[in-house]
Length: 344
Image (tube, rainbow, N blue to C red; front, top):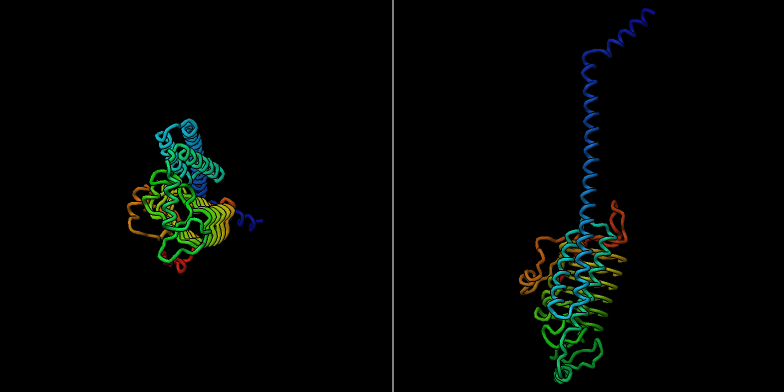
């Protein structure tokens, strides 16, 4: 009993020793510090969520208000001045969307971009409707065509030696500024080119092309490539958006505010983009930095208002891949050893 009492006393003495008494407050202090840090982390997370929610609400309200204003201008616009105002406000809407990409949910981003695409299509149609019809333009073009190239040759037909090919344009073009939409359609195995004076702030549409090389020297407003197979597209800076749809085995060099790629496979994209690239229903897409250059490209970049120091070429959103902890299998970075391409 005495021995047990001595042991108990010794134990009690050990617990109450000055060293142990000093350790207890240290443990309590550490726990209190950890608790305070956790409280601060939760508070910061809550504040960040509130800020993002406020930003999303602001974007939704501002976008909806400006979208309605642009729609009204397009609906009631009876003059080119009103349409130019609509175009300027559309560019403002695109900038608002680009600046909001980092905090917008994927669904909201997709809905906003689709709304912009619809408005841009309506704007192009209204511009076409208001363009004055040129008298005798068709007769003049037929005469010029007869003396130059054969317009009845089928797509892919070889050109006569020494005579430049003249592929069919997408829409009738009478002169600079006579149409805000230009491009090529239904062409095979040809080199297609447009110069700066033909492209400046116009909407370019390229469709149903096969084994073609397309060179666009200048500053378009928008660019859309659809149903292209084994094509190479080189384009100067695009002021707003580039849309790529239903293409395969292509190589592109594009600079723009926003890139949207849909139902496309096995395509390499050399990209300069100030917001983010978006892919959807795609596979085998590879990205690398924009490297194409030509005389006058610096001037075209200035006219496009693109920030050349800002390039998010490898920051890609895949709408079919929502897992944040795993990379999307639908796109990848093009290895550096495969980026050496002779553009000319």
